[in-house]
Image (cartoon, rainbow, N blue to C red; front, side, top):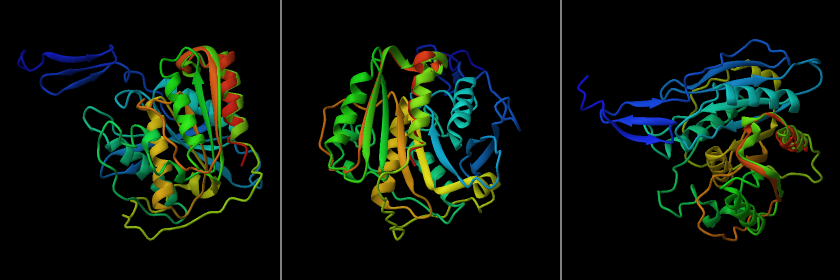
Length: 366
């Protein structure tokens, strides 16, 4: 190769670099955890192709099934972070965290491997997440999407607080985690306030702040006390019992395209209760998760019901607040003393465990 075309023209925080030839080198993609038929926790995982045409794929996680008569399980669509450019469901960070969440919350999880920048510019990641939702719906009776909005600094894609349709979110409840030492902390709080004041009338929103932690600390130190507490909160969210009846509005008449899937994924067919579907994302993945829920609320979906959404350390544009008219409920949780996605970097910490518990609690609300 010509030395001039192999010149490095951009380096992003030693996470990836771009060469003059167009070649991209990622330094975080070297370690891949293979899917496993079984793990110590009983969680099984396998890789699935969502769209052969685009290469969209994902990793599906199934918890240990101890009683086949216990009924169908909730499903979580998880969208990883990484500034839209790095990481994947197959990295040790995300495979291990999602597997732990699967076991703790006793839910089925589809972790989406959306196409990343810079090879695939936004809004392709949003479209991939939406197609992943349609793929899930296809296992009950679904089909697909509509066009996205145009780019812009105040585009609701990137800055949901500016979205005049924020009050039409397509879920009934939301749990938001922020961390005290995360540089993006205020963005999470602004998003919480925008949703809270939006007029979203069909659900609830809660925010939890972790003291003394940074961005996605629960991923970096998953065994820490705070990461474990976060896990418990997450699990509690998934297991909550609804205190009112949700009205499932099916529009289903908008122009849509047919999903590639032909209802062939047995784990979904056999184990998922499509009336209990959740979305979650961390860092930049929260942006994509929000847009899927917003799109579902505006376009309407049939074949499943999105019960709620969990956002870990949201990464939104920070251009003020706006009342959205959303009638649901929103909660924000701030983790003191931690930084951005600390739960990924320290998955065993106390605060990560606390975040996990809060997430699971949200998912179990029903």
